[in-house]
Image 1: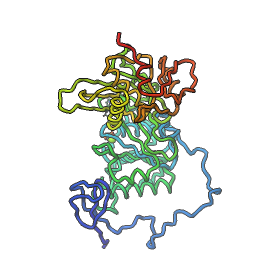
Image 2: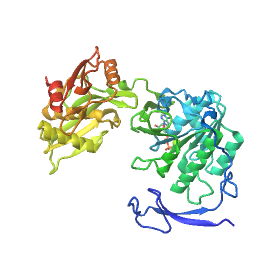
Image 3: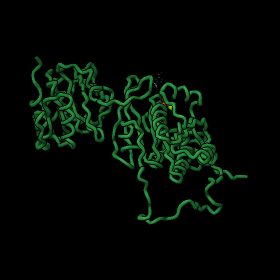
Length: 457
Ligand SMILES: Nc1ncnc2c1ncn2[C@@H]1O[C@H](COP(=O)(O)OP(=O)(O)OP(=O)(O)O)[C@@H](O)[C@H]1O
Ligand SMILES: [Mg+2]
């Protein structure tokens, strides 16, 4: 009879203990420990001595790489975040909120790969084969070499992979599958770790591409142990406003390409469609007249510059302490910009509520957005406007100085393509030459405010 070992694992951070603990000593969460029982059943490819004979060390000069190492998904925006296509034998984790479109993008990708002659095994652990077929019909995925396999047991999935020899396997989702070697329930930290480990072995030994769907917790982190993100080659997060039709894929980790790349899609009844010109999407609702409290910035997402409108609302507070609300920008960053505006520019906001919003529902993490945020706040507080043909680029330091930003040429080209005539840029970027846009270099925040605002007509 197989011997069993039991341990208690924090479902929040993966901390292990021999007995139950009310509070996790690692992450301080309460009531997060679950018992996990491990049997001593060994995975099949390990000998009784524990030796795996799959690989032998090879000289680096003897290792052959095929010319077709990357496979295009034929979805340009997806290829972009993958660094040019799927690397055969890699593991890609796609995580996102419920209902954001994870199964949709992977079914569309499966269709595109199958059209190129690949054999796909689509493991649907959450939905039935019928439900998946309905979606495939709606998305127009008709290719014949996609095998749908409704299964949650990893050992059965492994057997099917051995039998079918697919080129790509889709796991929908890692939280819904379980391995017999771990007796805790599917979705637990140990199950996810074990299942991912086995899938990784399969991918690397058989050169099969694994596309794995992962859930996110309510704080927006990928559910399961942090080690999941370490094990896979590419981590893609699927973001977007569920109430709007566009969706954004962002690469958080990529062993084969640039990180922080974004791909922008629009969700429709026929599935996800690529958005060729995202600036139209983010700026099309913008009023052509300048309004106090708005500024256009050029943020750099991966290698792609994006024009985004920042809006601010500043008003006298009815509360004892003023409110600060940040939508789409980091809250700490907003507080820092407000402190610089108060101390270095003399704008008194201590009795004012400040709301900042990034239009289009996207998150702007880049420091080059600082100057745009500051100008949106300053113009709203003073009831003046930034010229509607001006873009604002620059990072603000604590003494009110403007720091240079990278990829300034690309940002300016993007602004010119969208019809902007003037750019406020950091002084250190003043050498950038562009004959289609007026460049105004600024050293300090106060200079930027006087350079770009005009009294409201
Ligand atoms: N007929 C339809 N027309 C337009 N959009 C649709 C239609 N059916 C579904 N959708 C869109 O697809 C989304 C669901 O996509 P999908 O099932 O791929 O999401 P998911 O991330 O896999 O969800 P889950 O976490 O439940 O597995 C819906 O939220 C909706 O936006
Ligand atoms: Mg799904």
